Image (spheres, rainbow, N blue to C red):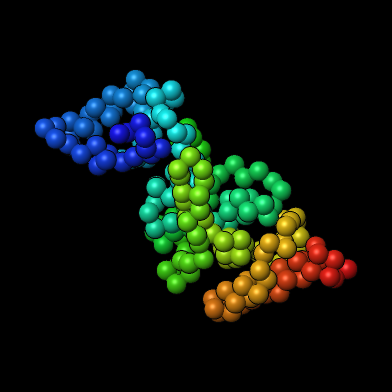
Length: 203
């Protein structure tokens, strides 16, 4: 049943006697009458009050691009690493970069290389929903990798990183070593220093 699905694709409504053209026409009518919200071409969610479950923004992001996971500031906010509210959901993908504006939120997809597409977990979001989200360590390094000047002590300090006791500095170092990126290696040392400062090991 469509009502049980937070989001669904056109193909979910497998045609019986109807053709796909007829299904698309019906979907278009439902969007116009306000029963459906079109999130992207071929991707929909029921509007209030017709839906049983409100789709989580992270689930929407994952569904928009299959080869993607939520990362950078969005995942950092989810893990409690930064104090600020993050208005857009940022994901990384091996596909082309894209920005999508919907009535349910703003979604940003940043491109990464296939050999850097790892370090994420399937996470329970509640209400029977799940999404792939970067680990704290990978979210931080994805942000550094894709942000100019992010391997700078002042930049990292201004992020006001918090709860760094939850972050495994050793994992960050291993990820940086594996990447072979001089930028990430510099950042890993700075992050280790910030973690010691937060825990009081370095004053």
